[in-house]
Image (tube, rainbow, N blue to C red; front, side, top):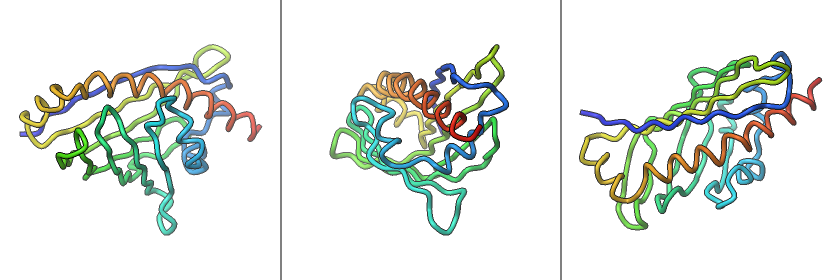
Amino acid sequence: MPATRTRTTTATVAAPFDTVNLARWLRGLTSDEYRSFTPSGAHESHETVAHDPHTFESVETIGGTSMRHRYVAEVLEAHRIRCVSADTRGTSMGRFPVRFRTTWELSALPEGPNTGLTGRIEVEFPSRLWLYLSALSGAPIWLGRHNREETPRMAASIAADAHRHT
């Protein structure tokens, strides 16, 4: 039976709601910008797969677990994106191979003159055993920290994209 761990964080995009376009922003995201979202250097690369604009590959290391994601955008809209990596692969603590499902979502809502952004990461392990082992390695703490670091930086990047296109 699968077991999940979810972390949600909010931030403010300093741009009016009607100028924000999450789909446009994600398609234009470069590896350099992706790397800038975490001060710890967790992000290594982000690429759109050339033959499929709805597929993105990224490599990152969070709390000692190196991961390779192949996200498919199930929802790619102006105010909501939901990307799923059905088979994220990695190495926990530098030596143990791990596989899990990762869902990454961003949603935008009007927030006065700005836009509210919610970032959500869900990791689904194949069994409760992997969930418990991830807790022993500190993964819940690292996952929460990672989401808190990257969501505000993504909000700033989304605001810059909105201002470039107005």
